[in-house]
Amino acid sequence: SQQGEEDPQALSIQEGENATMNCSYKTSINNLQWYRQNSGRGLVHLILIRSNEREKHSGRLRVTLDTSKKSSSLLITASRAADTASYFCATDGSGGFKTIFGAGTRLFVKA
Amino acid sequence: DVKVTQSSRYLVKRTGEKVFLECVQDMDHENMFWYRQDPGLGLRLIYFSYDVKMKEKGDIPEGYSVSREKKERFSLILESASTNQTSMYLCASSSRLHRGDTQYFGPGTRLTVL
Image (tube, rainbow over all chains, first blue to last red; front, top):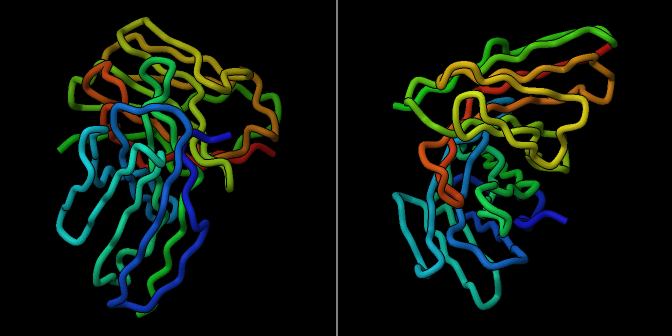
């Protein structure tokens, strides 16, 4: 199974609402990253949180990491239609320098 | 800004054809990666390279080969394309061989094999 698994698979909200996506993983990590992918495009790096950090902010993004539960969450505040995209968490795998991506959460923000 | 480019956005090939997908990065990154992305499966690593002429198999290398003759260029080769290789192919690069280092992605090539 995937090292990083996002939940929910899909999320539909109104513009202005907050969106929360969760990621669970199985093995110990050095860091966890979140990426965004607009439809039919490549992935864009959003934020990286290290295993010794619990929370990190970047603009309207807030990421938390709970290593005891092997989980992370991505919160997008005051969402906009332009936030419509798929969001992936990615972890460093236990076997060297691979980055392992989850299947993603599809976010749809209605204007 | 880091720029990763891929030779084609869309490609249609026939079964049995040899297919070349090219990726170029302009940031002097040591590491380059090829993934395929299929609905519900996320990104799966095909091959990666940590230096010129060096390559390592990823999770799904069967049916693919790669070439890295120059630091900025990483090519994915489908020796004999098959319909189950219809997919979105994403190239990425990163600067250091550090666990989980940030990767920079190209726009992707959507390949259809008929």
